[in-house]
Image 1: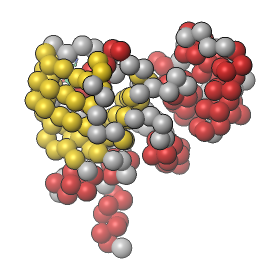
Image 2: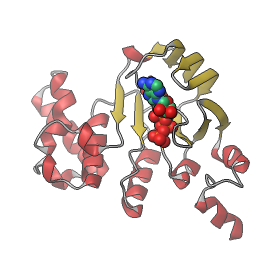
Image 3: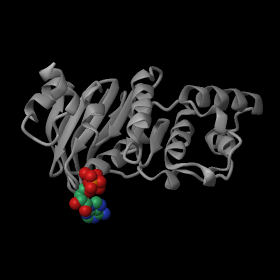
Image 4: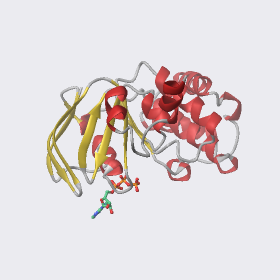
Length: 226
Ligand SMILES: Nc1ncnc2c1ncn2[C@@H]1O[C@H](COP(=O)(O)OP(=O)(O)OP(=O)(O)O)[C@@H](O)[C@H]1O
């Protein structure tokens, strides 16, 4: 459970919020505080006031995976294998174990065929999946994705969505997205407005309240007409 109490930070103000285990999408207008919330949930920033715990633990004491919106900002190394292996090497894993984990994670994400490539030669979509693999190899307790899908084409975005919905070994996925079809398929949706949580709950509940807005998922509209 992610538990937020008395949170105040920049534009954000969250009195009390409980997010159970699962895949939670964060959405809302530009400037509503989504990235700010994600930076707090990943421990990148500390709140001015209040507290965030994950499964009763301080965010700074747990293993966090974070992928930003801009693939180039995530990648450090020149070779894909070395990039994905880097968190394991920094944590002094044995070489054989590193090889196995990198191979398995790459297979799951469909990028096993690019492990020998130079990271600078990758497409934006490939860089996104490499960044995701690098975030996943340490089996984080929380995976935080800040508009990771914003540069992906429809098909690749669907691939990402299927992967995220299929990840079972990570307790918490927090994904800021402007793709309402993705949010519609998540476990929980958090809709921010001017730094406040305007609507939060299961996708059906949240999107019913957003029916006459541009945030209504196309997929849900099609279902209504079917
Ligand atoms: N260091 C800061 N000092 C003051 N204001 C800030 C600071 N960082 C962010 N903000 C403001 O807080 C607001 C929320 O920013 P944030 O990046 O969290 O929004 P967002 O919902 O992620 O926006 P977008 O969808 O455009 O990426 C914005 O108005 C932003 O200018």
